[in-house]
Length: 551
Image (cartoon, rainbow, N blue to C red; front, side):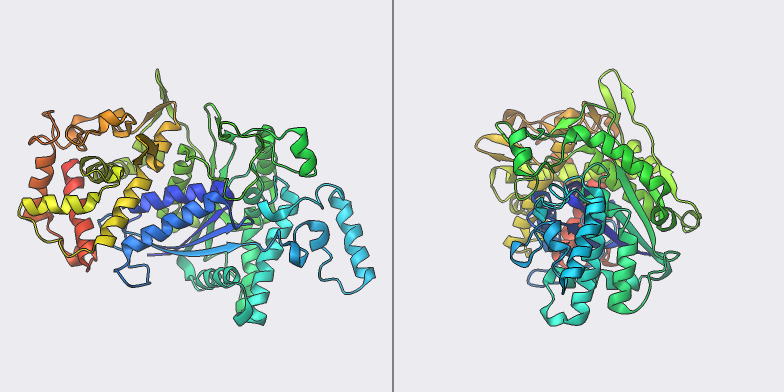
């Protein structure tokens, strides 16, 4: 098994990582360990906070109650990957230390007037004095990629210098970055690094070209060694425009000194970035596989009703999930499963493929996402979605009840008592994860979770039946909803006979399969030890078999 690294850059990269984590929860990255770095200029970014809290919840489910370690990688089960999170953000936007704009930042360490004047003259050759050098950096680079690449590179190297000079006084985010780089520097010949980021905005487009060299320089500073790009192979998404937002008006442009992301320019930004990447020496020498992902349909508008200004960052930047982010996560799946021979080609390989259409619009199947592994992907994602409906719909965790506890109590009624020892707080963590994955009901309204949002971002079809994503509360009645009837092909549903929720056609069939000796968990086969791990593996065995896929 290789050593695997994921880097999520900026708000869009964080949402791609969010999809990646949910794939891990469904067991799609089976028996893998990932070191994950979140990298942003905006420490308060809402998408960043949402994804990092999701990883923390994932790890709460993974670890044994009362322990701090992230658990271990498991086999053939839900939550099978081990995820180690490292959080880094650049120390920009700090007014107290002269780092809130480029004009101040570029001269903060100068010791004399001559050096200061030289820096100012040099900056004015490339950066407009009244706009680019003056805007507040707290919310990132705002599509100013020429500025962003320089600042991102030097921020990473500066973090390594700070930890090397005085580790005791280094900032937590600087130490986290160096810990991540230390793992990368010792990865050996099987190291693989995948980067999630967009090419139409600021942070992602700025960072993708410079990160390999910035990491290499930081490793040299901190550990006195170089990163061998023949051993550690890089891949990335080239994610172009797929959403828009309210364009800034003149009042906001003046307030922001004219430097603010304009979604009307995203297509042009994407084109310029692609032309640059095609000829950039770092991209050509360091990246092995690049996945060009775009959106052929109507662009989604992320502006909220009543919003008067463009959201430039901060906690308010918390956008809905989109299917292209899942496609990006599946690009990482493809990258990590490629053979060593496919990683040895001297020239970078560019990948893309189209989406089928029918009379209803776009047609997303398992094959759209993972090609020949379509059945594995659909089986596991479908099993996790069915489990979500068991806990959320049948046992009402979506309505604030203790759904997983209720399910275990139902098992007790069927003389299955193996999982009574799982602690209440551990069961509540599973409930909350399922709410984030699928949906919750608040104020008598269905609030979409990740997979619901993915489905609703498509004008067309997303793998499963439409009833898998119903938003009408009446259709989510625990006495009638069938969590085993989500697939278009009847052979993959728990029963082909139809009928109500509590007949032998669905829920009783789940319990009957759960009792079968062949589904009892083998600790060695699944690499599980705790009661909670055995419970999740038992559910995985049962539901994936009920779906009747043949691999």
